[in-house]
Each structure stands twice: as C-alpha cells, then as structure tokens.
Image (cartoon, rainbow, N blue to C red; front, side, top):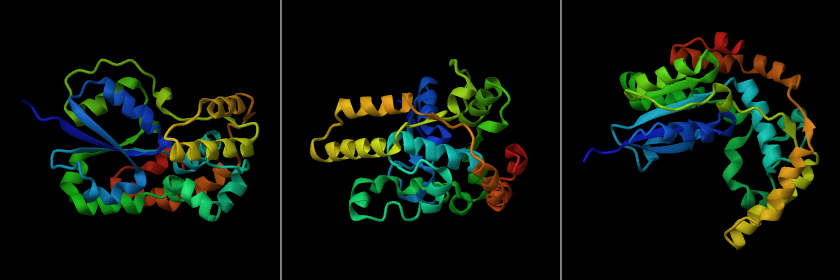
Length: 258
C-alpha cells in the first residue's frame, strides 16, 4: 500500500489558509494536510508528523493589506474591541496585558497585526534548516497576487505536487480574504467572544445564541473597505518585503506595488 504523503501549509486566516486547505482536500491528493500559523515556520523540526518526503506550502500576502484584513477578522470574531485601525495598531502590544485576557486568548498572541506580518527572519531560518536545494524544491511560496488566472494557479500546484489531473472549480477571488464590514458594536462582539471562550473551557461547547448575535452584529455592521494607514504600512514594510524578495529570489516589491 502506497504511503500517504504529508503536506504542511503555513499561513493565517488573513491569507485564507482555511479556504486553501479545503481546496487542497478537493484535489484527492492521497495526502495528509496539516496547517500551521506562519509564525511556526522556523520551528518545523518540532512538528511530530514531519518526514523527509513532506512538502511545504507557505501562503504570502501583501503585509500592509494582511495587517488591515487581520484586524477586521479579529473584530468580526470578537478578539479585538478597538474599532479604529490606527489605535488598534498602536495598542497591540498591550491590549492583552491582563491575566484574564491571557488565560482566555493565549492562542491568538501570534495574530498581532504588525508582528505576524514580519516573516522574513522565519523564512530565512527555514531556508537555513532545510538547505538551499530542499528549500527551493520542497517549499512552495504561494502569492495569490501574482496569478492572473485559476489555470495558472492550478498549474503551479500541479507542478509542485506532481499531479496529473485536478478536477476542481473555484475562483481565485474566493481565496482572497476581504472583509467588507466590521461589527456594528465591537465591544458587544468582544463580550460575546469571551462568553464563547469561557463556555468552551467550562462546558466543552459553544452556545448557539451568542454566535447568532455575533453574526447579526456583523450583518448590521459598518462598511470599511479602505483605511489610509494601509498606504503608510506599505512604506513601513518595504524593508521587510525587500528582505523577503532576496530570500525567495522573487521581486515581491513589484508584485505588491510596495
């Protein structure tokens, strides 16, 4: 019996990691798919499922846009209560300072907007661990912005994963995470999230009613598709993108317009 291959996907919700993994499972790859936060890239040796035949896929996105989208995601899911992007970015190092916050939200510290967009050092550490040859042969860095069509995207995956045929209908826009609205009241969303987290700890499940109110809060929410701070972040992240371009031997500054 042929051994199942292992595919390790790195990214966050802001890169659409959940949607991407669902898409991979539609391909019938005869593979086990494992997903990890991108901040864990430099710790691959600690992954217990790791073996020499494993393939790695890293999802990358314009860091300025991903910071903005991540903030909107965190608002919608109730992990953030500051509904001003500028203020949230300024406060992100202290917003989870309290002991109770740390207990409830210990799993989301890697989702800080600025910090989680800095991945060049982690990717460099990965390159040093794997070696140059394995790094470029067994790691695929997927930048959705560089693909002009679904066919081009599928052909890249087919080439990397040695696939003969892929039967799947999807749109590249489906994989790009863009929240058009933020909650009508972010503090209500935050309190409801706390209720859900406490329920999981105490009872082992999430009650339906708070989730219903959270969805309603988003439905009645405020439209926010752009923020001036994204342009500033594009400038602030330029050095990071230049480093990443050098490591990957790909001009990301041109792809992302930074």
